[in-house]
Structure formats: structure tokens, C-alpha cells
Image (tube, rainbow, N blue to C red):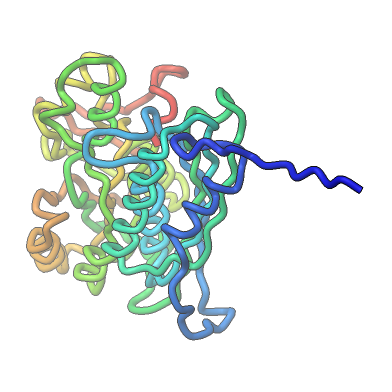
Length: 325
């Protein structure tokens, strides 16, 4: 009886349907030793799926965005991030050099964020079905330190941001549309758990500023808490190059996506120490007080223009660029 052996000549230069691509990712991101078991009630998780256009950009990529994004959102709940699990969807034909860049970026971001990679899964889909890379990240952590939550916000609390607004969106828009500003305004993508830890003893509530920008964070917070927030537009930190790049596409920094910025609500007596702690950290040097919480129960956001007029802020449907995060 004759036996026929089938062999596959897998292309090792591009992502493909064979076992090579998932094996490479699994080896590059092999989980380390598991930490101690975490009691159920103390466990907190955040899961987010990330699509970025373009997925590889000047000072980062979708892997770093995913790790930092999940870790930052988990830290904002009051948990200490410990582990992260990732699922990657790669498009067939993606250069293996980019796959290696992606895994190195994920590993580097996890190390910087102080989290261990607990699990990773990879799937390859046909060319044209994934816009090169999609990433789902789940961050795990345990509760610790003073509590955080919107329910703790009080009238008189100051509103702080930990860094400039819109840099991430400006970088991606400029790169995608060929505006040329991406060399002057890098993405702000960064893990911020350590920054929040330094400031946390005086913080009532924290939110990561992501898609939708600061305006979306403020809108949700005001509506959920039932208090009106007043923001001074002149106090908003925005890099000049970012403002120019966003303005070229008709975007306001308030609406622009960030990948390394937190919005904090801090009692007035703690504002000075919190601001000092933020500015002493590499990722918080441009932190600023941008507004305060009022006793008005309307649950709205008011923007105080430089001329002293108070206005609302609305976004026309379809005016925001899609897939910045």
C-alpha cells in the first residue's frame, strides 16, 4: 500500500493560514508564571476591542494602544492592574516583520504598565477582512487604595486632565491624510496606572479620555451624576501642532481621541497636591485644572469661552473621524 504525505510550504514572510503565524505570536508573547489566585469579589476586569487606522504609526501601534487602553480604563475604576489577555486577528498577507513589531510592542507596553501577559490567542483571516490587525485586550486587577467613583463627585470638585488633548487623534489624522504634522505631534499613548497611583489619595473619580475625547467623558459624567460641569476653554492643554492638524479636518480638540490622558475629579483642598504629584510624573508634566463641578442639578456641561460667554458643545453626526482607537 502506498502512502501519500501532504506537506505545506507555509510562507514565513507573511501572515497566513498555517500554524506559523499563531505559533510566532504565542512564542513571542508566552505568558509568564501565574500570580497568586485572586479572590472573586476583589477581581476587576475591563475588556475592549481596538481598531486603529492606521494600525502602525509613528511612535506606536495598535498593540501598544490596546495594552495601554485596557490598563488605563481598569486603573480608572480603582483597581490595580495585574494581568492582561489578548486576542489578535491578523489579515493574511501581513508582513511578518510587522507581526514581530506588534508582539514586541505588546511585550514592551505590558512591561511598562507592570502587567503580566496571562493569555494570548491569534486568528488569521482572509486578506481584506481585518484591515491588517484587530486586537481585543482584557485587563485584570484587584481593588486597592481609596475608592473611586462618580458617586463621590461633589459640587466644588475641580476637573483636571493629566495631559494635552487630541495628540493621538492629530497624529493619526495627519498620518492618514498626509498632512505632515505627525512628525511634530506624536501620539500620547501611554500606560497611566502608575500616574494615577501617585495622585490617587486625593481623587474622587477618574475616567480615561479615549474615543469621543474629553467632551464625551464630561457629558457622560455630568448626565450620570446629575451635576453641571463648567469648563474653561482657555485652560485646556492642547499642543499647537495638534490644534492645527485637527483644525485642518474640522475637528475640535475637545472631541479628539486620546490614548494617554485621564480626566480626574478632585476636591478643592486636594487640587494642589494632586496637580504637583501629576506634574512630577513623566506622563503628567502638562496636567492642568480645566474646570469645576457646580451645584446646578441640570447635569449639563458648560464651556466658558475666553470672552466670558458660556456655551454648550454639540457634535454634528458624522463629523468625527472613525476608527481612531
